Image 1 (cartoon, rainbow, N blue to C red):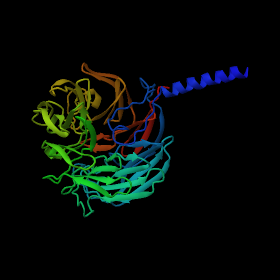
Image 2: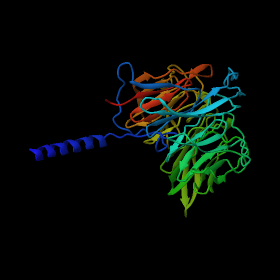
Image 3: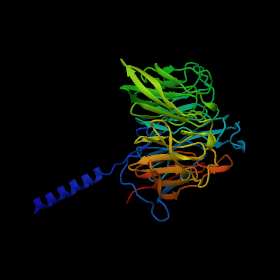
Image 4: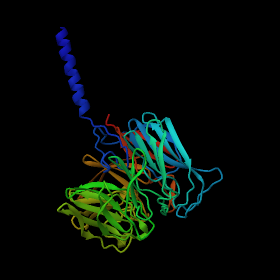
Length: 458
């Protein structure tokens, strides 16, 4: 009888292990998730929302900011800003601010949202669209790296919040970096023993710091203009070579991530310095898209181990207005390449599918960003996140959409309203913060709160 009970317990234990192993759980420790590609790979996620929308787990008050949250090891990291008592930002967010305040980094418990620790420091803003920080915190190896809108890079102990090291890109005499019009926004990239950032200044457009101590390991690239742009550094393996991709308002560049040595550079002069959306790699082809200038596709090659790039095609759009665009003119949305098609949001909120081979348009649809008749809202946006054979789209109106995007069109499955848009832009209310998807939940913030909803199938 004892042997039978033991056997039965073993069977139950094995069944539990197999069931648990079949359900994948992930953190979201940086910009675009664990692999920095924006794909949500967890399983056990709901197919449609329950009546009344997804179940709220918790909500926590925060201040202003565009920075999306990061989730790692049971903790949520989110950055914000609060104005000084007598300070005020312009009513028109497009105008440059000149306001005192504090930037803050919160560490919250993932289960219930209670505060584990908070760090803050004085930070005078002199930028346009001054709600708060832009860059998602990066969590790696027990540390969290936070880049503020005025170029303050901080490394904290991820568990305790203790200060480890800090840099000021603007005040540091080694850089004296000019502040971009819309602030420092390029999400830090951790690679091996380095944290790589867009900094600015002569010869230091991109800098690698020792991730443990903060010492500079290398610096690279100069520009004719002082504006470094806003595009996050990315590392891709292409043509058999590991390459650091740095896209500035002047060119797309491939560098050796270990030394900063430039491999190649493809000129791409941008209007208003708007290098923003994350470059995407498909095989050995690299795709970039800009608001005014449209899209460009490069073929990355390597002969005798020497990486290079050649132009495959470039959009011929004459501007950002809907009737002047041709390929994809994105302002915020990271595009995705799947099965020969590129999906992304264009200049006035048109969700578009274009052909990877030549950039020609397959279809466009306005429903995902909230328009239904014609594109009338400049910079209308939705963030696209593939999950299995469907997509989760979080739009600027605070709606979360489940949909399928295929070459045949946009198929909406379900939609739920998660939080109110509180930021003011172009005469309307928006939320322009990329959500985090982790542990079968969505974590999303506006300028007043961060909210966690369960997206689990059960």
